[in-house]
Structures are given as structure tokens and as C-alpha cells.
Image (cartoon, rainbow, N blue to C red; front, side, top):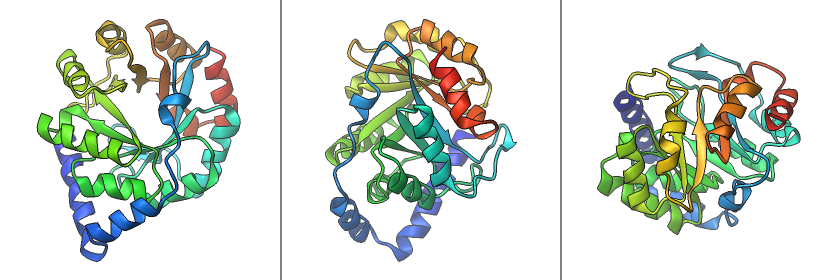
Length: 256
């Protein structure tokens, strides 16, 4: 599944590159205003931080919400207290787009994450051109030399890489990059099975200075409290926010 999702995202980027070459995307990226400081926004604090996700669908859950106005959804997230906003831009299975990212970026003041299956410099460059402050890099999807190249490019462009792991080996690969914002996804992207306790088992292996992000399997305040007790500095939440009242849900999660 992960290989298919990554291949599809790369193919879609290659299609976009036929009409918008890398040189033009690079010019647009360099013309953007400076990225917001995502690491400062998500730094450890007395209260857990929430990365709230604009997410219409997923391969594991199917359609979740239409979200005709992603900017309006993002406004609610910011009102509810989200420290950052994740925008799914994968179009085939998650029904997202770079237009969603642009709309959200223009609407909110908190950092915005491009969440996609990033595997090429072109995708990183177009993330910055669309206004992203953070870019997701999935360790399991990339060979280490490519992961290192993309990690360095994200930083060179002033953005923050969120490096996602799903095992002790992948966490070690993230640490080897010098990554200081690392997420552990409870969902195995090769099988889409969930392991809610994975974050807790891996938390002790995080680099000392890294911000710890727990991802997936968050539907209730108790789930947030579970991750917080295991050492999470931030929790990424998607489904629970798009299927209910996002402001009330966020406030309940932050109070957990």
C-alpha cells in the first residue's frame, strides 16, 4: 500500500511538472514569504500540542467528510487551539490537493504541514511554492540516501521536516539524519494495521532534543491523554476533527 501511494503521488507530480517545470516551481518557492517556525510552535510545553488535519478520506476508512472549504475548516482548527495544521495533498486516495494547502496557508497564522507521499525534490519544492512550513517525510517509503537528500532540501528551503517512523530501525534512521521533529505513526502504512501502544514503546529511543509527535488512533480525549502520558509533545489528529465539531473536539483534546 505504501509503495502504491508513493508511486501514485510521484506520478501525479510528474504530470504537474509537464506544465510547470522545476525551474518555475523553484522560482515560486523562493518568492514565498519566509516559512513559519514550526519547531517553536510544537516545542514541548506544559500542555500537549495538537496538529489538526484537513482530511477528506483515507484508504483505511474511505470517505470521511466533503470539506468543500478547507480554509474554513482550518479557521476552526486555529480557533480551537491547534498549534499547526496538516493538509493532505494526495489526490487519489485521500482526495486532497495543493490548492487545499494554498487555501489553508492564506487563512491561518499557525504553521502548515504538507502531508503527502514525498519522494522527489520536485514535490518538496512545490510544497514550499504552495506555502508549506513543514513537509512530511516517511522513512519507510524512502531509501536512506534519498531521505537524507530530501531532508536537507526541506531545511535549505527554510521549512521543517516531520520525519515519520514506524519501528525502532526507522526511528534510528530518523535520528541518523539529525531529525529534531519526529513522528511515530500508530498505523503501519504497509498493512494499515493500528498499534496504539507503538509510540510508548519507541518514545525512550527518541533523540534527546527531538520533539515527539504521536500520529493516528486518536478519536477521544483519552487517546490524547494516553499519548501524552507516554511522552508525546504533540499529537496529530485527523478523523475525529472532520467528523465532529472541530472546535469543541480540539478544546476537549487539549484539556485531556
